[in-house]
Image 1 (spheres, rainbow, N blue to C red):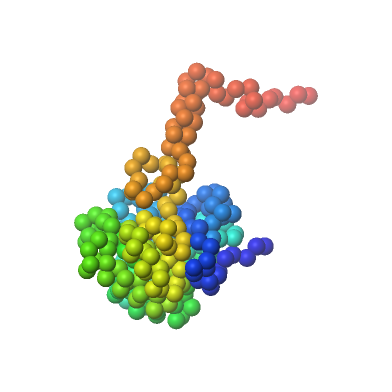
Image 2 (cartoon, rainbow, N blue to C red):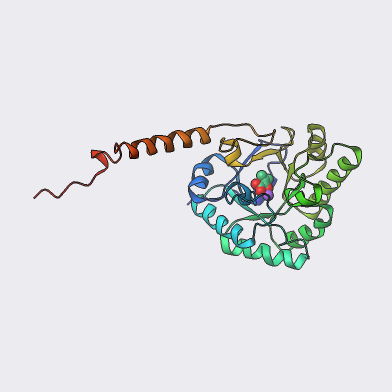
Length: 268
Ligand code: KIV
Ligand code: NA
């Protein structure tokens, strides 16, 4: 039985070989990603890319736990972290601890991630001091999409820049063992990466970070539209369409099932 990568091992990768991270939501995908990734994130992006929701705000704790269980079953090597969804950790430190503990207990995952404005730092500290490994998430915070008026890159003026640095430093000092930085320019990602002790994991945040993460269906080309920071490494949409079209044509032509796919009568 291979042991999984641990939070201290991820933390020790600061400044070393970049951390390879991707999102996963189901067991077969997790099994394909596991040999190649250091960390699998069960992101609340599941609401958008799996459940067809317009943003991540309606995602529930039960949804995250169900997907977290599936990802744990499909993987055995990578560290699995599960996102805490909107409204399950912001109200109080106790609320956050109880819900994080439920995620750890019911999925067996090794860490949780919270979108971390400065106001969440005390919550990160409360959980980290009580043995819950926590990942922070600064810059573009998708759970703030309503308040921000959409998904907007951060740090583009001096005030916003200072705010993102403050968020990252607060998460770091509070004990986050890694920090996701989303949607910021390279110079800001580089400055944050130099200032915090935790490894930074970038998404739309340049190669200056200590690791990278992308939403797996985005980077495998499942959708027509993706953010500008996504590089497509496959054409899943094209392959899906070709496969489904060929199946539909075969069925209509009675070319499927063919002789190979039909049970034979028992020959006596
Ligand atoms: O929900 C998600 O998928 C995320 C990242 C891609 C960092 O939070
Ligand atoms: Na997320």
